Image (cartoon, rainbow, N blue to C red; front, side, top):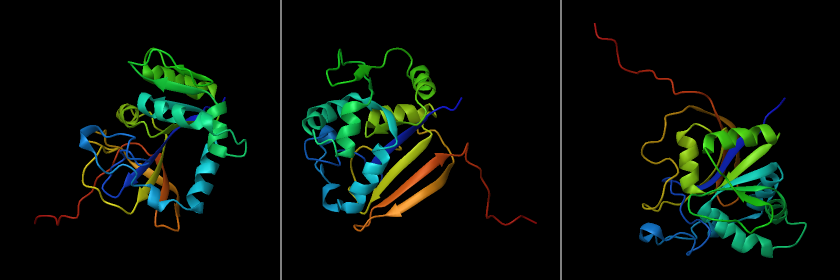
Length: 209
């Protein structure tokens, strides 16, 4: 029996910042003043790739902040031809939160119990992708537990210097394999990396006689 895979999609600056890509009010924690840095780089290639990726989803796992941002926006988009709205409004959404008491968005529920066990159960339940979008705190928890099967990373040609980073201090070392890469008309490099075990090491040092 085939199992699904957990994929993480994240928008990143060149210096690794993932905080508040889509708007000034998304996440101002830490006095972050650069919200909306992604928007000037939007093009048709981005929309095409995003549509294709959402078309591969069987379910979503979201952190509380991302869930609340999505739940306030996407139910208002009712065009059945919109691939993002169609997937998010229709498919199951599982929310990892210790503070949220209930979920009201259609087909959404809270994850109860051990996160790793619940993710493993989702992989058994769904044959294709269980997708994470944004959800920085959740993403770091899943990365630390080596639960992410594929990283879908969007690297934008901008440097911010401050903000939350996807691969923060304490990230578990891991090797990855590049499976696919595309460049948009605005210079965004979109890459898919797959897990490839632990890092291996070598040396360019000269042997000492």
